[in-house]
Amino acid sequence: MSRRDFLKGALAAGTCHALSSLAPPAWIAAAEEDAAARWAHGEPANQPMGTARGIHPGRVAWVHDPGAAHWDGDVQGGGWYEDRFTDPVRADRMLRQTLKALTGAMSDAEAWKRLFRHSNECRGRGAAGYQPGEKVVVKLNLNCCKRRTDPGQGFYNTPQLTIALVRQLIQQAGVRQADLVVYDASRFVPDSIFDPCHAEFPGIRFEDRDGGEGRFKVEPDFKTALYFGDPATPDHGKTYLPKCATAAVYQINAAVLKAHSLAGVTLCAKNHFGSVYRENTGPSDGHRGWNPSHLHLSINVAQRPMGTYNALVDLMGHPDLGGKTILYLLDALYAAPHQSVRPEKWQSPPAVNDWTSSVLASQDAVAIESVAVDLLGAEASASAVAGAVDNYLHEAALAQKPPSGTRYAPAGDAKPLASLGVHEHWNDPQRRQYTRNLGTGEGIELVTG
Image (cartoon, rainbow, N blue to C red; front, side, top):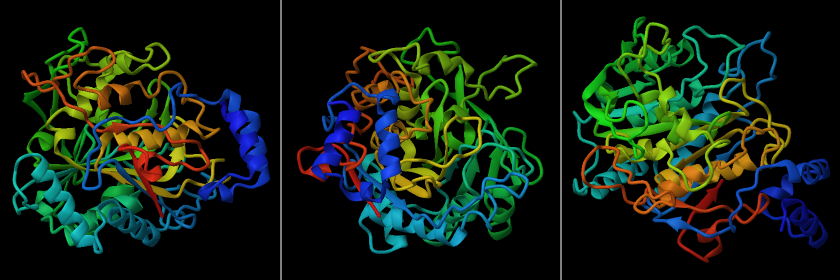
């Protein structure tokens, strides 16, 4: 059944449920008119593949608060990153609600205990939590940002959710300031994030491409390389990770909600395009070696069909990246239709002609991407979502035996990757249910609040 036919049938039968009840008739008409032009994944709904991960396997927690983001869109009057346009109190509350919904904990501190303990148990480190002296890194997506604030620039992690995360780690998880590193290797940490975080927690280390002004310059670890599933990929075995990532015991992948001109989407997996270094990229390389352009061919969803190699799987599965990640977090207070533009209001419920005002989190690297792909794929403004967008999710979910036949072993050892998580598509854009919601399988569970 096409999405157009489904919408007609749902209206006739009165079967629109849950969040779709917020959609006014104007949205239904627009969605019906646009349905034929939107991205279609081409696989049956609610058919999970891979092995679900997490305390509650396959769980993705999603909290939406329409009062969190209220920028007027006028760049002459200020930027979305300012507290007067993005509510720091609501952002903090949304993060706390998301973490408790994800873990099932009754308190913030207990939520973090469960996340750290589960990570250690899965890695054979025993039922231990964070210990002082263990490094924790947070990978932000600072693409589009400048060092100085600029209302006209594109979208990156909101300062409000970022400082809420830092505050949670220090005050609730008990992480020492000296053990916490926040980085994006190929970009700049902007004043809008650095200044409030540094003022409250001066002991935290911020690392970016150039360093300076209180930040530190990211250094590559030449002892830790990426080995690509396709050895013909340029700089196979000569693409290196940041020392801050390899020295860490735990990582938090804090990405944003964006579509992308090459990959279709840019979420937690592609966030690590800001974690790769190559030598000899030439004097014209503005990234100074922190340049992922050699991976662009493998992620081009317009040219590469389903069942082909994708370098995102190597990033998701590397033991110093995905292997250390205790939390996948999507800062979706705003969303952007393209990697290089400012955020735009959505048309999809519950954000009808409004900002997305959401936070999503999971312990399952594949599940959270699958939910975000469904959200972006149903949004009319996300026109870049086209082509084999979910190919990398099939490859990651079935990494031990992927459709492409690729042998994914990104650490360069003899042990190929196992499944990195569970993938499926929801039943439809209105009900947004997965198999664990329906009680029909062991796939994704979307918990909303």
